[in-house]
Each structure stands twice: as C-alpha cells, then as structure tokens.
Length: 468
Image 1 (spheres, rainbow, N blue to C red):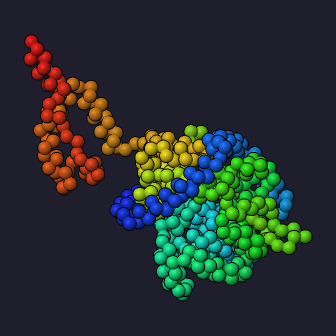
Image 2: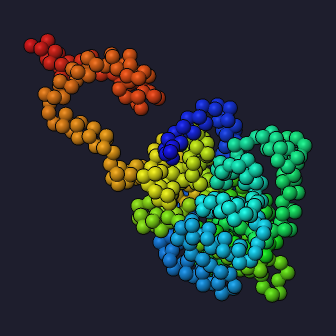
C-alpha cells in the first residue's frame, strides 16, 4: 500500500512538472495578490487590525471551554440542538441519525470544509442519498469526482473551457466560455434542488459565544438558501471557530474578505441563532449544530503550537506559499492544504503519518507574514519536524549522527576519513544518477558535494613549512 508520503512525493513531482498548469495557477494567484494588496492598503493600520484579531482569538482559544458552554446554552435556549462530536465518526453518526429520524430523502450542502474533513458525502452516499454541493466551485469538483483544490477556491485549477466541457458532458449543456452563462447553468440546476431538499448542511465561519449564534460568510447566496428552504439545517462547526462577542465580527469579517479573496467584505454575511419561531414565515423547523473536535483538543493541549487554532480559513497562507504554488492543492492529499494544513493535519490525523508535510516548506516565512491573525506558521513547521524526530527517531539518522560525533572526537580518524573521501570523490561523481550512486536522495535534485583536494591541515602545514 502506498504511504501518504510516497503519494505526496509522486503527485508533487508530476504536478510541478506541468508548466502549463503552473502558469495557470500563477496567473490566478497574481490577480488575487493585486486585489488583496489594494484592500489591505485601505486600512488605516492593517498591522493593528491583525494584532487586534490575534488578541481576540488568543482570548477565545485560551478560554475555549467557557465560551463553548455559553454558546451552547444560549443556542439551545432558542430551540436548536447542539452535539459535541469527539471525532469524525461520531459527527457522521449523529448527522445520519438526524436524517434517518426525519426520513429525509434529499440533502443539499453549502461550502463546508468540516464536512470534507469528516468525509460526510461518502457516508451519505453509502446511505443511499445523493448530496449536492451548492457552492459553484464545490459543485464543479463534485461533478469531477475530486476533492477541493484549495479550501477557499476549490476549483481554482480549472479553466472556463474545462468547466464548459464538464457541464456539456454531465449536464448536456452547450459549450460556452462565458463565466456568467456557466454560473447560470449551475444556478438553474440548484434552484430545483433547493425546492426538494429536506436537509441543508453548512459549516460556519464563526460561532459567537455572547449570543449563541453562528456566522456564515459567502459570495453566492447559496448558504442562505441552504439554511432557509430545507426544513432541517445541520451546521458542522470546528470548536476553534468560537468568538467571544458579536462585535468581534467587525474585525474578522473585513479581515477574512481582504486576506481570503481580496474584497472589502464578502457579499453575504449571515448570523443564525436557531430554527424559525412560530411567527416567522421561513427558516428551518429544526437546527442542529455539530461542534467538532476531531483532534483540535490535542492541538489545544500543545501550548507551543496552540495558536494554529486561531486560523479563520482565509487561505492567504496557501496563496503566498511557494510550495503550494508549485505543487497545487491535490498533491497534499489532505482536507486542508498549504502551510496551515501542514501544521494542523499532523495534530488531527497523526504526526508520524503526516510528518512529511512539515518538510514541504521553504521556511521562507511568507505564510506567517501574510496571516491575518498572526499564526507563527513557519516556526510551527520547524517545531513539527523536531517533534516527529523526538517521537520516533530515525535509526539511519541516529546511526549517522553517532558516527559523525565519534569521527569528530577522534582527529586521527577524521584525518583518515578525509583522505578516503578525496580518493572516492571522483568515482562518486561518476556514479551520480546511476544504480551505484551512494547518495541518490541528495543527488536527485543537486550536485553531489565534492571533497577538497587538500585539507586545511595539509594546506596550513605546507604554508608554515615554506615560511621556515
């Protein structure tokens, strides 16, 4: 069975060699960079906004239990049902139970990465249901049978022509390069599905402790329809999404829009605080909120890397990461890509299985510099490398380091090794790239290091001898 590391390396190599696709990604991300720079420049002090947001999230995460209790009690007092799911399996089981109890036949979803995280679509399909993604990007990749390429721009790797060909094949439409027309094709399909859906599934951008409500931010209006038309609304919310006060949204909504999509603010910002009341004409008859742990409390227990829970899923760190820009989102093979995904995935799914993600970084610090809530991402990647080694040291590296220490503590042996190295060096260079290459992992992407023809000790002795 192929390991996640081997698959990652194989996919990364294949994608990075596709120069045409890489140019397409770069073109899209350059447009984002220009839009983001323009919006950031409009702040009186963007750095002050980042600091304020980071301080709010710090207070929220460090008092998480208290805020979750307040959020739950106030939301339940208005008729909503809140379920704490310790892992993905418990979250899936609860959602499927709600669907069975209500004899629901049709499920529609707005964009929610937490549902991707718990593999909800697969569970629904196994149950005999056909969940439909209503976000345009998510709908496109669902038709292609793919995972999201980017957790903000799920279909950013596809051109208009590819989307047109997909709709022509799957929906029987005529070919077009017009973005508005492609959007209208999807809209016509969605409008019919909203009318028949029994259950609407969403995520949430924020959970507000003070008032017991969730906040959803979107650009298409599909989340409002998903939460309003079906008679049951299920929201899957990571426990780290908590904010203490509703006024905190004044910081986070503009930051999320500026950093995530280069907008002043997203088109639709909705606060939901329970099912519809007796005097309200629309809204769900039932509202269920699944608070998802799934490894988050393990990260919470790590005081050094806990601030990764401050993430607001804006995707800015992906957009500036030189690794993501070269290997794309699917190469990671996990729900959350890029620097933030490389930090949180080992905590959520196992350090040893996903420790290779921490090495998929240049440690340039661009991710930390761009993060709107000041998560120390590049240092966390370095810390994860250390933690992986401390948890399970490599036998090969341990032997190599012990051998190096022994060599350095015995000058005569070090001197002899230098002579052997100078003798072997020409042969090693000839063997580079062949079956006899002594260090194939090193020479795969770089020249083998050459041993100097003369050691410093020999050079020094020769020059001193000449002075006598």
